[in-house]
Image 1 (spheres, rainbow, N blue to C red):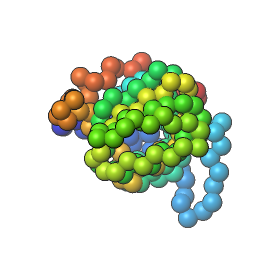
Image 2 (cartoon, rainbow, N blue to C red):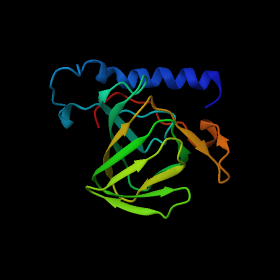
Image 3 (cartoon, rainbow, N blue to C red):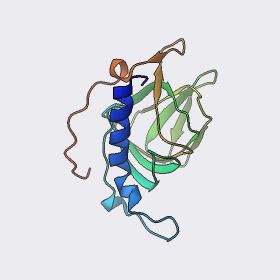
Length: 166
């Protein structure tokens, strides 16, 4: 993620992701029906994960994202600058955190991850969860020793997003 080209590419993609969030006005109430949520993939995460912004602008700051992961999907060891809070809506997963025991999670479970805390997350079934990020979204993959790895070394390129609802 230290390459300027990668940062620009990721920023442009997150701007696209945030398009739905721009239409929302936080000073007025609104409902975001699941049926109208547009789920997209990002090249900085495995293709088995899709997400849809529900509130805020993940490119600029705090945001609430609705995330879906397929069975056997794993987001390898990484950390984020922002604080993350997850609320599992459906499915079964596992959160592994550096210097902590692994925890199995299921519907209704809550996970809090401090800023820059190294972790990985996997789903054994289809998973849906809300992800609240306290600042602009970023992801920094690391090896077993905590050394940062380039995204291209960790994530295989995803098939081109057709823009269809999933």
